Image (tube, rainbow, N blue to C red; front, side, top):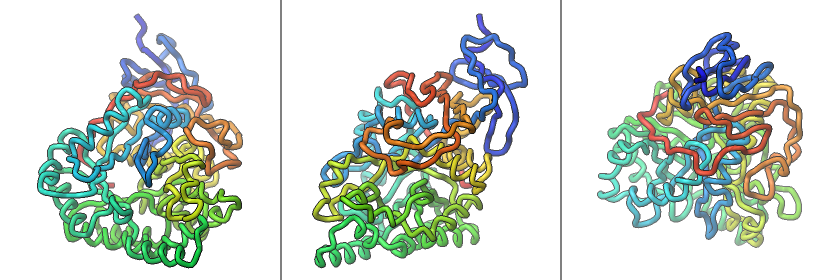
Length: 461
């Protein structure tokens, strides 16, 4: 009988706090031993010499098979998690959307049906609340106890947005019950006014999506949500921050000692409002909310990642085929909001974060894995490399140089917003609970092997 099921040998192990050379011994999907030379007594040996070994990436902001604007995002839990695996991500937390008149239990069941038996990596589920009555309020402690510890409120979008009173009550109840609230922060009324103004003037092109959602509309909503969190004496996590206007609100609250946290996404570091001006309706590829911003925001967002104003880099992965985007040919307001990004996140953040000197290796691990695990109640099962943790690992070759193209990706969509981006460093092996599920950019795992992650109390970081 072999001592180990698998040994990952000779890699440079990088965690949120350390870098060291070690072998990693794995048994029954768990890291069972780490040392300088664990020998060769294993059923499978992965040679990681000359490479980094990172904790598996965690993307806590995805939208698989999500209804939006009369259609559905084009990745389901099978295709989307295959893409994630090939890019070095081993866990996601997806957003279930409460349909009108539905209970939280019904919402959860709908998303579990989408995911169970399809996902190839482990997954958690957030609950996006769209209405709050007494029955729903009473469900909150129960679903938190069942492992659904995070709740999202939209401050915009017809049919999904909640008012300030609902947001305040939810902040109080979720915090009392040991969970965490997240918000999509944009000012609904500003957007409605500008959207209708532009459309009445015949301004229908994708650039007007961005112009109708100015950065101050994001900043105002972020500031308002933070004030409500202060009143509720509750922590708050603000998703997909795109600009100085919202980041400055988070920074101010954190400096005052309030438990306010936030994330950004690669698109807000690497793409800009200029992309909306691409000809032949190609600007529609980048229609997402919040929209891409002026490039002057890039250094602000990088600094916020570096100094822990923002704790996480997620993707908001929500792809639509161009044929779906064309629903908005005659009105920017009808273009489905969202873009792909789950597969390229790790390589983009390494190339444009680490190799460019914006962040170091430990910070890279924090923002792509460890911090999400802590905030969303998965740590130390996920998000680190330690004895007793799940063997979710990425062997990453820093010397691979390639150009990002749609043809190399597995996302179920016909473009990538990062077409032509140069990469230095790419995942070569992705291991989920001790199983190799991707190798050299190709999926080699099994459909449906992903397990639901029952998440526990959030850590404030």
